[in-house]
Length: 583
Ligand code: UCC
Ligand code: FAD
Image (tube, rainbow, N blue to C red; front, top):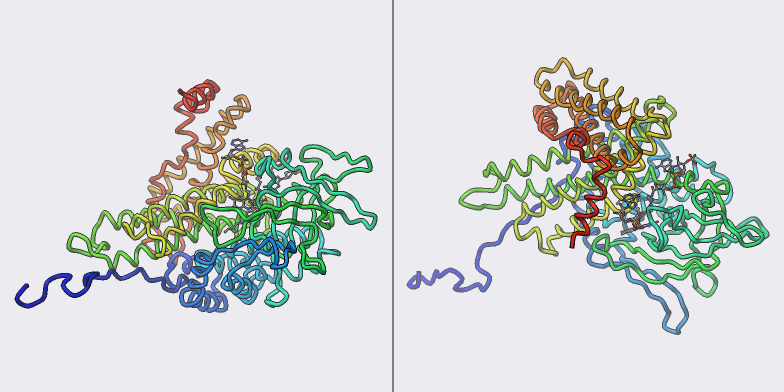
């Protein structure tokens, strides 16, 4: 070596080996399940060609903008050079391009134009699913914009919100506007009823001025917002609790001096992730607003927004999983260890296959909720569909939010040390996944929402669940290769029925302790049935069958397993507390 001058590292300080990076290809063409699902349910050339073209654009153009959003986070300018208060949230040019793109691609509009009838939500969410991991978190303002449009539409599009509705659902970039969703105050983000201190002071013209402090407001560069406040009576008194809350529409505007009307931006949050997007603390000091719900019907009226944003959240969760799997499987064809490519190490591929199973389950679960939403909106939903939509919305949000963190974390590890390196863009996926289980209702709060909707429907939502799962299983009963999976879901369903019967005889605290495991059981059983149903379709592949079989190896009904172990007995809370506070 010395004689030939070919010493390793002799000329280059860096050596001569450079690892090839994982390549993002068209996320639509790379996704067999997405295409299979659409071939089955929405076999429309127009949808396919649009998704394919959009996927191309995401891979070749938009993904870089997303990266630009990440490395150019928003900043807050409180004062202009001459000392005037301006509270200007400066965002990157890529963030602004995302807004124009969103309008042009109809990422909100599709849900309201309904080009494919009851399948329009599936089509819209398929676009968002392709877009989300490259969007620089622009999917967050889009979720809230969609939710606001839905609320305005369901309340009745009248003055002053009718103009807002047409802008929120516009395809013209110059007309398109986004909305915020300001619910959280310092005292409570989950317990909005106790936590909301903001008051609405009636004005002589029928409008209101809002005074309060909103502790988390995301995508605060929005043009308008929906928010909650308590209407003051003539004596200045307000009603406490949920019944005191009303829903308001407010525009974010500036006076002639360039100052925000009735708002001071206190500061931007310093966040673990979602750094591409501003999240601000806002002092509302006389914000002009219009009440759009009946007095005291604020929470019930914003519930439509929660449904939409929770579905968007679940799309983002499934999309994050899909993206990390796509990148990891590509990387496995480029990286060599122990003399062969990673793709030729069975244990590595088993790891990726497990991630794939989770991703497929999440995808089918969220798409089924989109299907139900589409049916509700196009007037074709049965009572069973309506019950399922109510029950499954918190279930899909809580389950996919948690899965996303697990799958993306595993995904990062599949790149070895490079998965931990900032400028690969990979760590951002994990940071951004972590928020998915926190905002829009934490896992526990949504588990309790499941209990509440079961109780309020007198069990009808559960009845719908059992009926629909059984019909999915019946539809696949003639496919022998799926028998083990069918047996597993069928058995889990019986266990769940037994659990429900036993739980009904117990004190209320029993169900509260079981709430999270119950929600997980609902998610796993329903997803198992969906995977089986998809695999039994005539156009399904052997991988679809394999995914269903693998999913059904999970403990599909953890609530029954833990019930048998006495985990919800009322003797456990003091023991849990003693354990937590031990020492
Ligand atoms: O985090 C936020 C924005 C983040 C950015 C957006 C990201 C979107 C995804 C992007 C992806 C990249 S905004 C803040 C979100 N905050 C929450 O989600 C709050 C979490 N807490 C809850 O969900 C609680 O369960 C509350 C606030 C709903 C509980 O309040 P109450 O007042 O105690 O609720 P009640 O008494 O249970 O319900 C009051 C009424 C009832 O109707 P009526 O009076 O007719 O019986 C309920 O049936 O509201 C109805 N209701 C619902 N209806 C309550 N929840 C729902 C629901 N989920 N669906 C339908
Ligand atoms: P808490 O309610 O204090 O919850 C703390 C813990 O207690 C959680 O683990 C929760 O699960 C648990 N817990 C609470 N109640 C119960 C119970 N009854 N039983 C069992 N466990 C319980 N909000 C907005 O309104 N608009 C926004 O735009 C917005 N953007 C956000 C952006 C980011 C990046 C983040 C992180 C948050 C944002 N939020 C926004 C706030 C978010 O919605 C809340 O943080 C969330 O709803 C939780 O509320 P909290 O922070 O008050 O937590």
